[in-house]
Amino acid sequence: MASRPRRGDSREVKPTIPLRRPAWAGRNYSLLTASAVVTNLGSHGALIAAAFAVLEAGGNGSDVGLVAAARTLPLVLFLLIGGAVADRLPRHRVMVAANALNCLSQAAFAVLVLTGEPRLWQMMLLTALGGTGQAFFSPAAEGMLMSSVSGEQVSRAFAVFRMAMQGAAVGGAALGGAMVAAIGPGWVLAADAVAFAVAGSLRAFLDVGHIAPRAPGGGLLADLREGWQEFTGRPWLWAVVVQFSIANAVVGAADAVYGPLVARDHLGGAGPWGLALGFFGAGTVAGALLMTRWKPRRLLLAGTLCVFPLALPSAALAIPTSAGVLCAVMFLTGVTLEVFGVSWMTALHQEIPEDKLSRVSAYDWFGSVALVPLTTALAGPAESAFGRTSALWGCAVLVVVVTAAVLCVPDVRNLRRRTKQVTEASAQPSADAESTVGGLG
Image 1 (tube, rainbow, N blue to C red):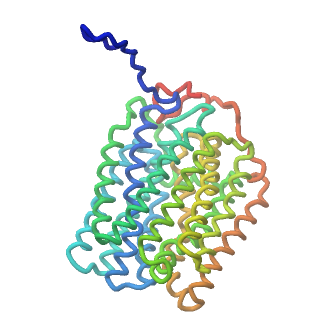
Image 2: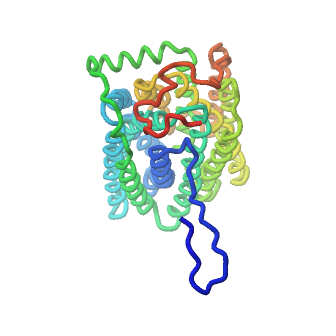
Image 3: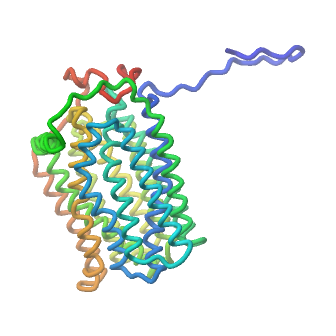
């Protein structure tokens, strides 16, 4: 309602126009986006803090790799179970429980760092608890997001979500690196614990009361088998997952182990490395903004071609370049990788039935991180055996080779964007979608 002018006030008061969300941005979508921003703001700084906590405690590159591997190992072990659980239980409850575990583990890690010298086994244990929470959270979150939107604007919805999420990485990485340099890693870990608590509280308000009860299945093993059949029956799906199982492994080792070491020895410490990661986040924001407008018809062809630049950061660290050049490389990589990210999410939403989204997402995550514990644990020994420069060049070459190989799969080159919903399942709101978003787009 327009406000009335006060008596004696001759100024005309214009009616206020309430701000409205786009039709595709329902309540669940908005809560998911806000909570993802909070989580990413804390976690990107915490990744830097964890590495430098190990180094400040007297650890070396091998120790940094062991702590990073301790996080990804339980992620690999529990991902498939997490996907099956998320397709059985209300997804928002799984997400909130996982956030609570992450909050407690990061808080304990922060206390150890702030009150004394943490031991390596303690840091590995707490990091492993965080990885366990992530194993249950990720499939539930991805399934929840994909089922919160429908219609022809899903690609734009995913792009806006990723733009907001990655935008938080810009501030989180830069601020985290600066905080580590100024006041130490313990306070950054504490801030991450608070971020998990806030994000979990937001996710508790997700509206899933309208969700129809899922049909009883044949048990956990049957659910896993059904998800495996869905996964292996699509060549484009398993081919890209195999590609990223190798690419993520070598890039993860470069970022988690070699990046902090190169920053310490050549760039001036945590600050420049955090800034470089922040530029990567800025690039992903720019890439997501691009994808709100650009809708490539051949989704996976365009996305896969944009994976080649993922080799550039490892090459820049191998040289090593100046901090300015590294930041430019990271920005470009972020832009192109986000083109792949939005295209990939759109393809999954388009092709995978809603009731299998979390299980397929779990197989996707499993393949993508399965080799990361091995490569991060071996990064230190590889540096000792071959030298840091050779190891980094090896990372860059592997990314190029596996990305070229996946283009040989016809379905990757030929999968096309659908302009209209052609199946009854995709024409109706999905189980987790809000009752008001059935006509999105």
